[in-house]
Image (cartoon, rainbow, N blue to C red):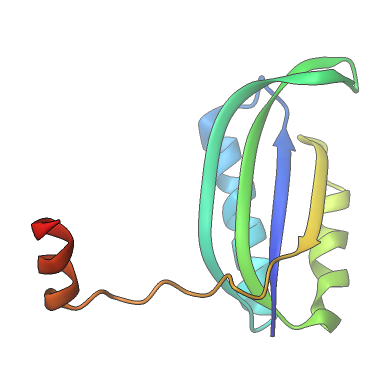
Length: 114
């Protein structure tokens, strides 16, 4: 499995319920292809550097996940036809990016002492 990062720019006028529904659909597509969603980062509404489809702003979301390279085409095809997604960028994540491990109690105590 490879690590991937998917940045999605949603329509800025999209209600939160619809955004959540679209994110769930993307997560379900990843898990249906034996992938694992590691983390979802929601940045919120930001100004765009240049207009995209006549929008000056977009809602930014980044999804970090692990997936087999052969399943990427299924994911991209489900994203391409969503009208509320104005742009997306899918890149291979760094090899260092892994699923966060639970910290032991000793490690937590050391951090608190410092």
